Amino acid sequence: MTRTSEGGRIVIFIPNSRWNAKRPWVMTPHAATILTALLEAHFDLAILDANGGNLDEEESKSRLGSLDPAAVLVSALSVEYHVQYHTALALAKEACPQARTVLGGVYPTVLGEEALKDPNVDYIFLGHAEERIVDFLNFMMKGDAEHMTDLPGIGFVDSNGRLIINPVKTYIADVKQPVKPDYSLLDMTPYITQDTMAYQFNSDKLAASMITSYGCPYNCVFCATRTISGRRVLYRPVDHVLEEVDFLVNKLGVRELLFLDDALLGNRKRIAALLKALIDLNYDLTWKAATVAAWHLDNDLLELMKRSGCVQITVSVESGSPRVLKEIIGKPLKLEIVPPIVKKCRELGIDCGANFVIGFPGETWDELRATFRFAQKCDFDVAHFHIATPLPKTDLYRIAKEQKLLPDDFSFTDQRFFGFGQGFITTKEFTPFELGVLRAFEWDRINFGTPGKVARMAKLYRVTEEELTQHRRETRRKLGIHF
Image (tube, rainbow, N blue to C red; front, side, top):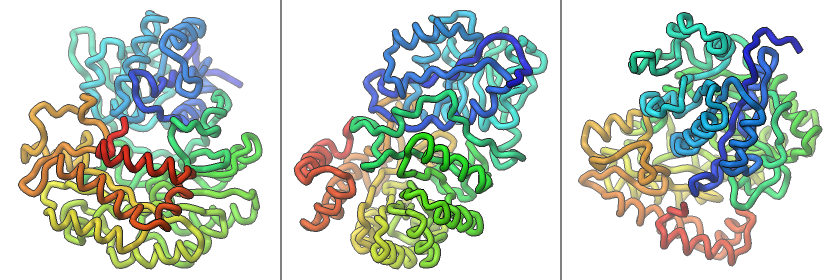
């Protein structure tokens, strides 16, 4: 290996999601595998994974001190876990006061000014790392402030105390050469051996998550993807994806994959080639898709998906009202195509779930109820209901703010306003309390209305019916807020 830069070790620090009494989120840190692929040839690189190792703060600080980094990189996937990221940066400064700290990922991309309020943050890095991060780190490690000041997509507080945030100029789809994830510095054991208190794959196999494309071409009112990734999609080459699958299957023993792409089925030729290759490779592998667009599905594709090992999909329906879909959410979905998809999935033995969102500004109470009627009519294997939550840099937040529909003290970094289980928007049609009650009790009615559905859900969640009964009871009594 040839390194082109000197200046000390760089550590990718993955905070423990359990710190500060938060719910654990134990899922493959895909950003770390991309950073490894980009940086290992250029720098002395190490990973400190406090999340996978379930390290407490003191142990993390001790290990950081032993690694003696010149720079610490923290990738912040979610605003909800911003406290954990800032805790990690504080630990880095305590353990290695001279180390420079960089906060990247979704959180600083959408809330850069908020992130830079922390004196433990030396730099924020906005947007994608591909084709950008090496030059940035080279300048930073050399102390080349003159060149760094003009780099797009970075932020810092200058010597005069001024906040400098340079906007991004490119998005992930502008990258000429997609990067193959590199797992060489990461212990994957915690991410494929499921902990009942961690993110649930609901699988009895060794399972891993994968991302084969980045970005989404659509513009749903509640989504910040266009701010983070732009409006185009970067599809990884099929051979890259197959190399990663082969590694997960033959090196780690994985037998089930969860695809996290927003646009997994968006390129018909590509997904067909990938699925046919999986069939030919005959891995005895099953797979699930966390979210798919219904308009990409037809009988031929569903049959190909089944032959390649698909056992579960979740369709993003969002609303049972055509007007809400078109005029409020901005989703190009025709509801009449959904019931045949559910029927075909049942014929093939593919579990079909759905995501719905209620509580948008401009949505009427009758339109809310139409969503639940539609979900019941379709008879999904599981229907998930969420309450519209304003996220940074989204049209939903802009609209709610302009119309004064949020609490006066609403803040993206206040834990009272995290999550999708409770509402914060109040209109003439509904209050957050009404949405919470409606969501919890309709979820229970629609998913568990008959003994057959109860048995189906217990099998899907891989729990006993007694455990499922307890979960239902807690959901009703806490209105879906378990954390």
